[in-house]
Length: 345
Ligand SMILES: Nc1ncnc2c1ncn2[C@@H]1O[C@H](COP(=O)(O)OP(=O)(O)OP(=O)(O)O)[C@@H](O)[C@H]1O
Ligand code: SF4
Ligand SMILES: [Mg+2]
Image (cartoon, rainbow, N blue to C red):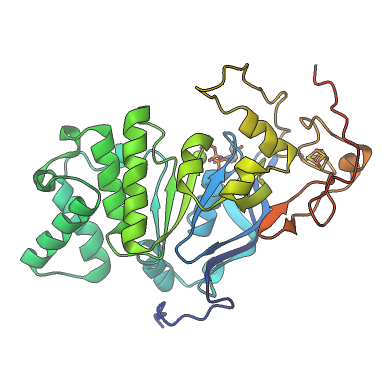
């Protein structure tokens, strides 16, 4: 039976995606790599959430988990991904196909390099529409593709062009147009500006925001660039080694970050106004096959305490919509201990 997503039930009317305890492992000959370690977060209607964290922390794997696109040797070990109340993890193949693109679309990491080099833009965009909606009247399909190009700020001549005739920024806009072609509820964009120079990055980011305003679509933006994120999103989720360390509104993450890892990430943002040595987060992430007992940030945390070595700090809300996983704070976000910075050298 095909699901009617427009009437799909949801426990909270404003939450469109509710990810609960999602765990994704990659099997290796020497044990499972715990890429996503039971994470929990949600997305509200029309909201933009940033998923940030250093390379290898599990951002792409989270996106693949949400879309149930994790490829072997990876697998979803447990958890729920409730899209408008329906669990994507247990969805049958027919509804899963419908869900992808029509409900959640993905701009994958390196998307612009995966455009088909021998297909014109019109055919690649047309394919997305026809595959999901069936054959269309030629003129109305053309009109729809031109509208999409216009929406992402591309001139009509791009319609007949091949990817190699486009600049990086233009190719990335074509990828955005493909992602919104079927009017999805949620767009996940993985490192969507990473291969572009800084000026083009800003322009493409601006395009994304305009598209969001026009369509009212929710977004998950995955990236490293905290500065770019600060200007674009409503909330930020900070990931480290497969875990969410802090998730809070953008102003709180940048104005009042609580978790030591978030604080270090923010201190490492270069500033053109203030000349200061950049903060480097010392140390390396533990081997993801063998997480330590207790807090997974213990080897790099400047405030590590005895309790951190033994007890895993639970992710909990300590201020309105501000969640952290750290033993330093009480249930109201107040410091519980006199913090003493450990010497990291
Ligand atoms: N096929 C695989 N086999 C084993 N481990 C894998 C595989 N794919 C990913 N991993 C591991 O899973 C972890 C999470 O990878 P993921 O690609 O999700 O990170 P990421 O945060 O998106 O990184 P980046 O910022 O570099 O894109 C990494 O440690 C990675 O090495
Ligand atoms: S729980 Fe302990 S080790 Fe982990 S981030 Fe907080 S203070 Fe640091
Ligand atoms: Mg990635």
